[in-house]
Amino acid sequence: MAYTVGEAAKQINVATSTLRYYDKEGLLPFVERSDGGIRLFKPEDISMLKTIECLKKTGMPIKEIKHFIDCCVEGDAKIAERLAIITDQQASVIAQMQELQDMLDMLDFKRWYYETAQSAGTCAVHDDLSLTRVPEKFHKYLNKMPEQA
Image 1: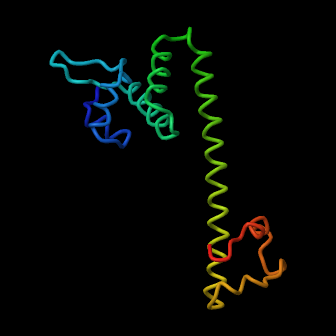
Image 2 (image 1 turned 45 degrees about the vertical axis):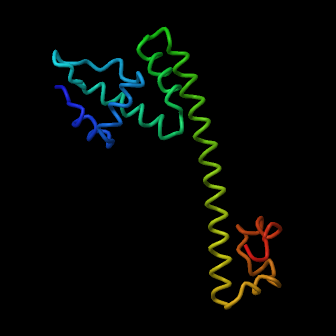
Image 3 (image 1 turned 45 degrees about the horizontal axis):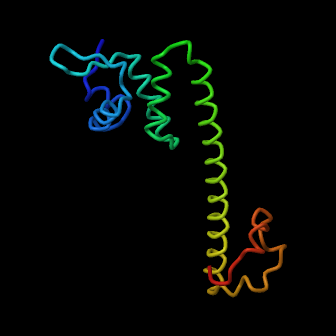
């Protein structure tokens, strides 16, 4: 079975223009074309497109994705290099996740801060707030708490 550009795009939830861009950037050397030049995506191509989308969503630049795809096309001789690329990107994603968690924690604190202030009718409620009235998970923010932030 072969998929058209439109069908392949639907499979991975991207615009057809995205797949055309990927092709232009050399990310789709594995995709066959019909005699009329139409791209024909096989099921295994869809799997590779999902990998490309995953790498893109993790923030990997197109140039590095192309390098990864080139390594895949070269076959077993590049397994170690492919593993290194994926391992590095995985570490990058873990760092991004920690950064996002830190931001979410700060937003949780700010939400608590403003909910408490709204209930009291003033941010001044926090001026003399004892630690026992502050949820423990927010203690780390108390030294950094600007008066009007």
